[in-house]
Length: 510
Image (cartoon, rainbow, N blue to C red; front, top):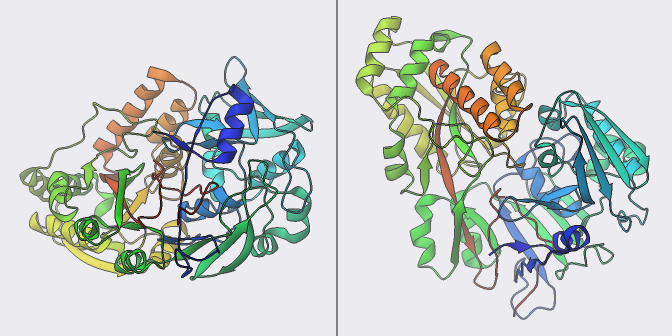
């Protein structure tokens, strides 16, 4: 069953007269208790935005949890990852997908009472294009210009055919031109104004982000008074929060599922939309040798890793996108687990035991990240690779991965495209993005190619990209996790395929 928020249902009705099934969330968080008149919901999130929580600059998964509730986007993803109307009621490409025309709703107001018009959409996208440190540039580099023929029409001009452009518009929140211009990025992050179902209350770095109900929301006012995203990086603390009633929903790790199921809370699960992988700085040290990178690939038993460390709550995956994301190639298979071949490649490369760093977060975005890193180190050491484990907090690791400091060698990371399309991770990892150390002309060309075609031709380009990585071992995909959530029994809720929280329709049952 597909659950849709009020704004999604209203968008669907306006655009296609479709019926949606309401997502009803009941809650008793924030210490209010089931008998309280205050309708509050508290979500235990793994991390907070890695940069300033400004949707022009920040494109982190943690940030989208906030933005999907505080702002509106042109289009939205439903719980199953399908694109639906939101601010835009319809969109149409030209013949070769180089121009897209979006028609906007005419009844949307920002939280300050000002109407949202096409000029705000144009301003938002143009500001992204002119902000060099914006995370969103990584998947908008095909965009050349945005224009508004009138207050309710927006035209996107692209430098090449790009059939999945509507998926990009699900990720970009629209900001008010007047407010953003007056406050600037830093000021806007501290006092944001959106048009979404909730309005800003407060933000404490490392603690929580608090929103309240927008009574004038165009999609219908939410039924809860307050929505709190509480940052809880520790896995045990998240589960204990749901058990104690201080949290209503929280992501838990695979090894917590069995204990959670017998503790009085509900467990809701679905396959995630991301791939956990070993990133590689292939520009220096032993890993500059392709044979040593291939040895790393052959040394790791993905199936055993999933079965033993993750209690079977994942699927081994050797591609950069998950099976439910556009760009996945069902019958593409990478190098097999083969310790003998790994040892032979190391010998051929003349590897003599030089130490290779493996950096990872001790807790945070990847459940059981420390155990995964230790297991990987065991596999590598078994074939003769000397590994130095280097654990750190999530913020530090993210700062290193997405900052200007080169990673030392190997690092554990994950990519889950909020757009449910493979272009974003492909660009970041293989076409000059922050995680692209190899700077391979071959992979960059393939990323460019998949943008110009659709259907089977696009899958063929992703197949060639996967095969190029099988050969070059520029990074080593590991698995797609199962997303498991501990949920208060009072909450009726289905996890979204993208792992984000769109909580526009939340209500108490008692």
